[in-house]
Length: 140
Image 1 (tube, rainbow, N blue to C red):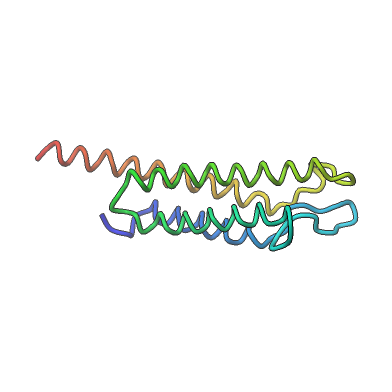
Image 2 (cartoon, helix red, strand yellow):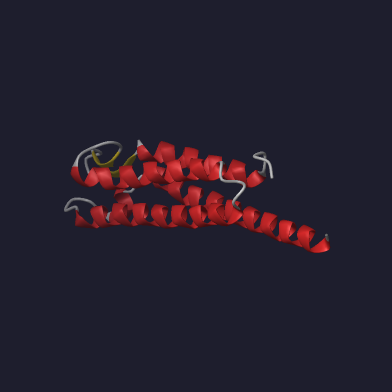
């Protein structure tokens, strides 16, 4: 196995997307002020920490190419962390008084969705590598 696989590229893109998302605003109020996003205090820290953790785990998974099973587990954990991040943002949006859910969510919230897509593509590529390796060892 080498590090120049397409799933390594997918994991890198997911890490970059989540790294960018960690510092972007996620919610606005009716006046255009940022309610949630970036590095802040209190509730702001939960999506920030989850986003940074996801970015770091995605980057860490790139270098675990020798253990495909562990790399697949990291992809699944990352997807679950991204879903938890988005759920936290939705909960905060629903708790705001002057904030309607659809009008206040920013387009930066598409970055985690794109990261999930790239993590699913990486998971599929890792599964393909596992099948290739098991097939080649069976032939020997």
